[in-house]
Image (cartoon, rainbow, N blue to C red; front, side):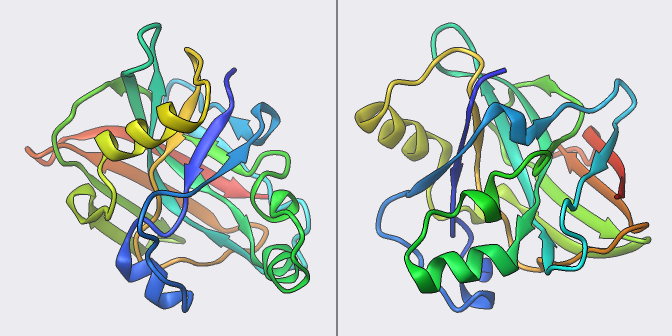
Length: 199
């Protein structure tokens, strides 16, 4: 499994809700292979909270995987599980974000589908209540911009993942919560699903 290149604050609504600014160019953090967990064929997965007494948020995203020519070959819905307690402490102290954004099991992946460069809808519900819902046309930095910046600064490899940011509506999770996430194409067809329980 490749590494995850995760852009942050790529939806203005999310930037506002966390009192952050939209950046002038895409900025990334790394998610190690151990952070990412593949779903079963029917979308089953687990959200590993790791430290359930701390504040841990869901962040639904469109994720794409790079092929041999380093262009998108597949896509899925994913949940970037964020330990906000650890991330906030890291921001205050000037420490790396790894404990907050790249801990084991923090990158929860849904079912894969072939890459489609059209706009898609991503959404997430907690215990049956929709918390996040948005179209990828709201992204501040397009897929083309993300790849252009990554190729300028880093050496990408086939099999790497690119996490494209989360829309507004992030919120905390607790053990036992049922999390469902989905991605729909322009026809309203679900092309990627994720069904998970928080542990």
